[in-house]
Image (cartoon, rainbow, N blue to C red):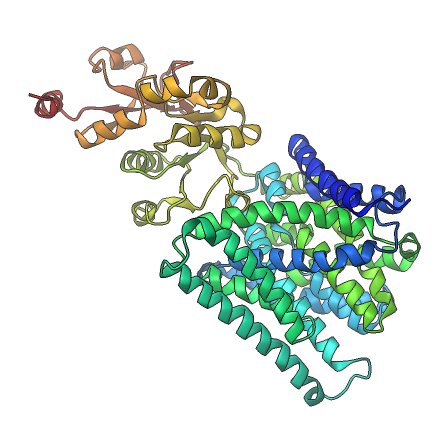
Length: 611
């Protein structure tokens, strides 16, 4: 049954966004529902993808969408982060990538029975381990920081690297033809594709970034203007040199992402919103367009290939790449098994598969269904096994009482230092790299980026984190952060500073329904805590004993001082809240905030009073 074009597009978009929402509600990777919806609506029911005009409608749009997705991947890859990664991570994204590509190619050629060019493309595509999939798995498993860091950074860095390898391999195949000519016969075409990508992608990206830095583009036009230029670069690069558009957009994102643009946070936020929509549409459209006759070609050889990818290709590549990297065998074993594929994997297969068919490789039509199957198997299997395997390997974080402080300011920085001195794991997060500078200089764990964005959540490591304390000067933002992380940490472990009187009057209904628990007391607002900081208030640590009880501590304690939290004798942290006051016991350490000298505070307050 062929639907009208308008209804087909509407149905694809609606299904994609509905799957994203349902995945969010159920707490499962969206890729599973998106692929399932496409297979059900396409090969299953024949509602989408049944007509002859479906390919003509969606295939050009798929190319444009993948170009934007690859631009976003390149924009998110910071070269300074690649240089600063630990030795083990560097091995995974260098030697590990090469070995995975080589072994995947051999498995595709000898086991799946694919032609060598298609096997080379398949091996490159399967190098990619999706950060959008690995992030939720890591938060679910609560791994120790180091093994979690290996998997997280591998996914972030491999995303654009694997896509770039697949594009370069395709360009080589495109310009070599089926006759396997000598290298020098291929170099002109490949060099032309690289040249077009460098000039259009790198050059235009650099010039566009400079226009942003020079202030030639107003803020409200930067994000939509950047999207328009990405689409233009993709189209022009394809016209200038066949299929050079994907490479050009990837390089454009890589150049712009490493220019230190002042508005990069807003640009990333806009890109992520666009990419969520594109990914939703892309997955449904690609899986719906799979031919049922192609699915029947996934025989025992395809099943053997998938088993080999899971049980041999990934484990051998990781174990060989990390040999001699001073990584414990348990962490190497976990990394050797966990490698879920994600969004870019299917997107690349959806674009390059039909192009390989056009070049004369009929088995290119198997590329997409084979990759979709690998993605679904790895996401499902690794999602169910990461937690039990991590427990068996003793890699689950023993402590779940670490504290994530959102908002870098002088007061929250001092609080983080006190927690660090009490040997409580603490991370301070802020969207501004510069506001985090004092925390970095103090040797504290920091997290730079917007936590409400998809990229910020991918980069955030919640292993060992048991509490979130929002301390920014924006009460609505604090409430949104608390609402976002409440399902993962628990509503009783999400706190924020109380609203000021003006904010409380304006946003009472919003705050009551969405805000976290009120940290410390109703008086501990952002404005008051910052004022007390500049008035010279200090943190005081006091350990209770059988002889020195909490009542003894409270007796001389100033009435306006704040009891913030308690570190139990076993290391567990408990916050004082307006809803539930603390009841410390012997052996607990109290962290309080009080004036250094009452007379000094009184003098300062009197001096600030209007005459």
